[in-house]
Each structure stands twice: as structure tokens, then as C-alpha cells.
Length: 517
Ligand SMILES: Nc1ncnc2c1ncn2[C@@H]1O[C@H](COP(=O)(O)OP(=O)(O)OP(=O)(O)O)[C@@H](O)[C@H]1O
Image (cartoon, rainbow, N blue to C red):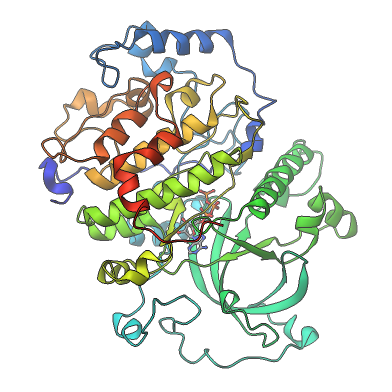
């Protein structure tokens, strides 16, 4: 496979890795647009219906022309894709029916600079996990787990356990006190190692256990997602902050929803919720309100999860710039399919499936090196993360919350009409697979695009199902039928069962020996 230079165009970004000048908006959690709250205006609904009718049955994916006058002008699309705070000095929320905006990656060096600029502090921070030194993993005979490995630059910390002395430890700001599920035992203690990632609503850190009361190796290294509260909440209740209460309650229900769904899940390919810094967060329905009743300052919220030392798939894919082996793409995609199948069978929709939210359990170099080793086929290599927009639905329930990430959002969510969350998830799976195969996002401007095409927005291309094969054009692959049947109108889109049954996925599943119970 060639790199993204296949287009012959140097300025083509891969995976939305670009610097567009103006910062992207913070992402809003689904409760910002509570499904019950969102009003759908009739004109929007009509647009949507017309769209489905307008797409020819012979050529359902890339209609030459869409017969909706409104779409000739992208500005008439009902869903604004970029959020501009009404007051640039504050990071206030989007209007209720604004879609949340994707985090787009910048060059890490640019991001670091930007992070120094205070008014851009909500911009996504790139702090990827450097792979483990190859020399270290060579010492390990069996497939390493993060618990067995020594982390780069961390040698002096390993082995130096601190015997639990809660009152001493509490004074150390680098130390996390955590309570473990299912019984909220604790507190136990971990020390910070480094920052490993950041989103709009959290910064994620790697922590190492320093409490010798715990022997479970899965708890030695953990990822800690530290929730960032919106400015509006940090400013506290006052007359000039009228939406404080509303923001608090929406934020709180989003947080408790993420935690309760995560608690209910148990699948190897899905991130594990291990604990929290305060049992209140999983025991109470309104934890923030309850804690604020005791103290006026917002309580820190730290979510303790399993740690994936390979970082996220976007970083890995970018590192390999279009040269990820086909078997690896097939393997990763099949495991994501298993995770989503499990979610959908349990009536949970994710709504934010994207490369950034697929985490690699091991450094990619290790996975590639051990590709043929049976030990790699006896366990999963990915975990699906970030359940901030997930929702437990009733069977066949339609959703109305307009949320997702710009490049991955389905046309029906874009239109703002009630949608089947499961089918919107499979649309996103199509985007993910296309991106891995083609080394670019399907709805970015096509390689060698004319200026007019380039100027069209991503949402315009999504609404028109405007994507095509480039690198893969002349290549036969079973993967292509999955993309073709995912990035299509919802009436003919594959559901997760169909993706699971496909030849491409079954080829992997039949060789995979992971315990799904
Ligand atoms: N368990 C983990 N192990 C390793 N890295 C992780 C883990 N959890 C998160 N990360 C890193 O941190 C990044 C941000 O995490 P996450 O997406 O959960 O945060 P977020 O604030 O919910 O983001 P968003 O803006 O999409 O809502 C991930 O893309 C990944 O790179």
C-alpha cells in the first residue's frame, strides 16, 4: 500500500490531521441535546425524507446530483457543524440543537504551542503514548500485559511501593485515592506517571499502583480520566451565570450515564471501568449536587479504567501513514465489530465510534511483530473507549440527540431527524474501515479535487453520500463490501449483525480465540 501521497497532492490531510486555523469547538455530551429535549422542525424532516427518495436505487452511494434544492447551498443544512461560543471569552455551551464537533488532530508540536495559549485551552491535546522500547518487550516470553512491562522513563518508580498510609498519602497531589468496583472497596492508591491523552471533557493520565494491599496485576497500571468541568460550572452559581443550574444538571446526567453504562458492560474489547475516586459518583443519582451540598467547590472526578499501552488507533494509523498491514486492519476492525455487536445486543449505542476511541492494548510495533504468534490470537488487541455519548435505549427506540463527531456522523443525524442509533454506529464503522484502508477520511475533499469540491464542507459530502475509492479502486477486497454497505442510506445500510457475518470479519473471528463470556 502506498502512503497518502497516492493522491499526488501534498496538502491532502490524512484522518482529518490538519491545521485549519480556527480552533474546533468543544464537544458537547449527549445530554446537551437530551433526546427528549430536541425539537425537530418540519422543514428538517422534509429535507431528510426527500434525500432518501432522491438517491437513485441504481447508484445509491454517490449520486451525481441530489434533487434537493436546499442542498445546493450548504448553509441551508439544518445542523451547524461548528460551534462558535456566543461569547468568545468564555467556553459556554452550544445551543441545544447544535451538533457537537469532532476533535481534529493537529501536528503535536502545533498542539503543544496552542496549549500554551489560554483561550485555546479546550483544543484537543495530543499526548500520545510512545511505544514501549522494543528491547524491553523482547525480554518477555509470553504476550506482555501492561502490568508486566516497565514503562519508558519509569524505571526508578517500579518496585518502590509505598505501604498504604492514607493520611500521609492524601497530602501528595500526585497520588490518586480510588475505590474499586464492584463493591467500592478502598481507598487504594496510585501515583501519576504521565499524561496520556486528552479530549474536550477530560484529560487522561497513566497511574501506577503504590498500594501493596492489591495483588491483582490488572490494577498495577490504570488510565485515569480526569473530568474537566465546563467554565460555566466552574464559575459557580450567580446572577450573571443564569444557566449554571441547567449546565450542572445536564453535565451530571451525562457523567452518571457514562458511568452506569460502563458499569453494566463486560466485554474484552471494551474498556473496563475499574473504579472512581469517590464512591458517590457511582452510588448516587445526582453526585455533583450531593457533593456541592457539602462543599461549594466542584469535586474532582477521576474515572479509573483499564490502560491500553498502545494508545489510540488514529495515532497508530498516522504513525504508519497508510502502511498498516491488511491483516492488522482486518483484525482490528473485526474486534471493533465484536465490541459494537455486544453493545447493540445489549441495546447500547455508542454514538462516537472513531479512530481516536479505539485503543490498542499493546504498542503497535509489538502487535505487528507478534502477528503470527498464537498468543496474539488468544486475546483481544483493542478496547473500545469513550462512552461519553453512549445511550442505553429501548429496543427499536429512535434517538433525536444530534451528537457524534463531524467526520463520522451519519446523514440522518446531520439532518436532525429521529434516527436509529445502531445504524448510525454502523455508518461510523464504515468510516473507520474506509479510513484504515484508504489512509484518508471518506468525506474529506477527494484527492485532486477541484477548488469547488474542496470548498464544500464535510457535511455537504456526507449528506450527498459523496465518497469513492481511491487507493483501493483497483484492488479486490472483502472489506470493500462492508464500506459500501455501511456508507449508504439507512434503508439499505448493513446492521452490525450483517457486518459480523461478512466474509471479512468471519475470517478473523474463526481464528480468534478470545473468551467472550
Ligand atoms: N484507557 C486508556 N488507555 C490509553 N489511552 C487512553 C485511555 N483512555 C483514553 N486514552 C487517550 O486519551 C484520549 C482521550 O480520551 P477520551 O476520548 O476518553 O476523552 P474525552 O474527553 O471523552 O474525549 P472527547 O473529546 O472525544 O469526549 C483518547 O483518544 C486516548 O488517546
